[in-house]
Length: 378
Image 1 (cartoon, one colour):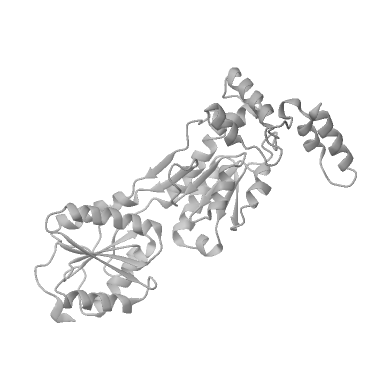
Image 2: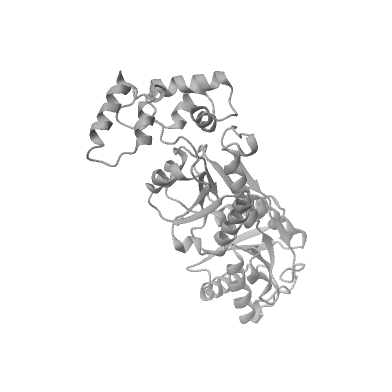
């Protein structure tokens, strides 16, 4: 009787509202009838999944009648959905659009994220999907868009409310190139930042460098902290190696670098190698060192990070870590589509952390460590 009453109420309300026949039909289905379990808030697929010990993607396929789950699982899902008062919001995918969410335009216009977006677009097109890019920090957009999309790709920094809304939606979501809370139940695509830091430390050590510096550039970027973590941990285990850190107010504040270098030299620490938080920071470091009369790489070697075009537009060309940003976008699309059973194969495993491995591109900004002092050049 509960579903009959709900239907009657909606029919009455339709006289003064724009409630659609589809929504009325969905509420009228007995298997999705609202019972006593939750009358104040919307029951999510994740709650049903947690109760049954299966993935929310298996729950979604069971509720929508799609293949990929056993009949026993489907019956269990439908039964729990009825008990919990689950109200279906979606009967079928009405669009092949992948929603790409950036926090704001400033983030989206950074070269890193442009490369990620390019990879998303390439792979979405290959699978016959369109891509819609949104610049917003309003988490309510998830609920407004989920009925007309195949899923969400969250690129870069996001507020926690946005992550939570995407995680709890009826469609899959993937986070790209951003740290998520521990054991957070959402797929994540990243690169191995910590591992990259370890590799650079050992690379420079093998060239004979013992006094090394990590140049953050501007503070506040999680990836730069992760690379420092790997860099510093490796140096701590390398015999005779020492590390100092420097930071700038902005990535291109050369005056901050000059002050830091002079201070270190006066304290008796003359670095022979600098690992930089990004290629942009590395260009600042190379330019200012040379302006100070210090030769790169004869006096100090410099390593960048990302391998942006600017790495080959400065002289000497930068040795840098090539980051697979475009491939991260491609991986995000593949992960997302696997969650909706692309080609009949449903990825119903628990949320996954996929890290792509970068590689070193050795150019002209690094060389074996010098044994000569460069302090007299200041």
